[in-house]
Image (cartoon, rainbow, N blue to C red):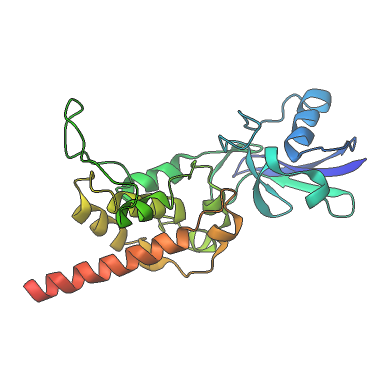
Length: 238
């Protein structure tokens, strides 16, 4: 049997409940949560969708570490027969293991991490060759699926709620290197402001825990370089 401790409630009123869950071969943490909801407590709230590591919606804190529960086998994380499961850190808790992702996506908007088109939908877009240096930089973060793992892992977010976070900044870097985006200056202004890329302390938790092996630290370092270059150009031209 597994001893499973699950955080319940909301941000304002939380508690922990203990469950004894049968241990099985090839069991994932998502299997454990599903068993509790189906066999013991149908009021337990959590998110999941694809079950194969494609959507990222099942992300939770497992023994204090943010993980996709569908791809996390119990045998790899259980400690003395015990699992502690909690909602993602750094986000408001709606109920039990379900977090409010609005602050996460609001920061994407604040970072201008959304495409600003140069042409209309009926016009041909600029061709981008596969071996373009800009294309290589833009592709570094293309596999981000917005799961929030890096955001939950980030101690800078924990200490500074205004910090835009690694996912939003990585997306901003992707667009900055996309010749089809029309707002390079706007992106640089957004990521150099309050809560921007220069707040990153380069601790590396975002890269350490990203399930897709992305490295937001590299993107953030690139943003730091480009914002400094832009500031120097403005000073020179003043």
